[in-house]
Image 1: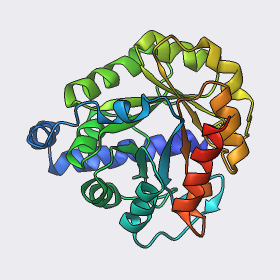
Image 2: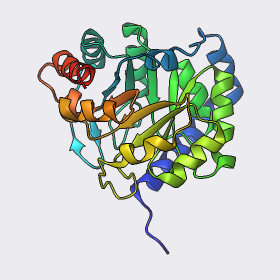
Image 3: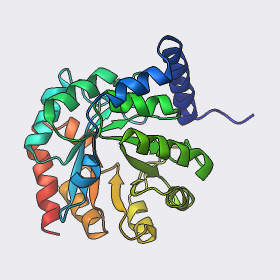
Image 4: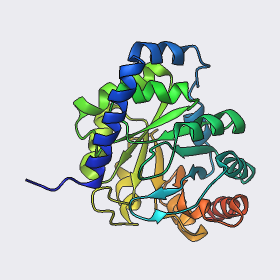
Length: 267
């Protein structure tokens, strides 16, 4: 029997969380409550579809690969610093065990900053998509490594469309990219970190970018720790970069974010 990877473990834990939540509040109830909230209306996609390299700045306390990253006692203060530095959108981790995130982090950041927010989590069930809207997100993350076929990915894309949420579809190799394209993804992320092994390949975005369809929003994820990397990814065709650890650990997150954007504007 093959060993369960950390990605599979987290997915099972999140499904168990959904099952427990559904026992006390049904999917129909969450959906009805979500639909009574203001519709995001494509705000996340619009924020990334510009002529500049945009930054999705992440509220990230920890990860399985890096351990504890930052305390972040006040996620709103950090997100506000990101906004001051010119972030186009905020990514908020809501997975509680391995990333030390929470739904409340997302709720507070979305309400306070006014920027479009991405629910960054391990989404395996429509329940989580409707939760994302109810928490104030404008977009949610779908990971092809968890949803490896079109038949698994497309239904959740459809639910997100019904919920009025944009979707960042995350890929890690050519096969996953093809699945994302065939499922109809329009915002496609290429994560330099393999979520099964945690190995980094900082050439991955550059190699996969030519395969993205015309009109798709291309997002480079993970491993951006200096302005030079942001500039290189912009030259390779990135519309946006998702940056967590570098900004969360920065003494001055706003200044660190401005440096990334300025370097890319000169590339």
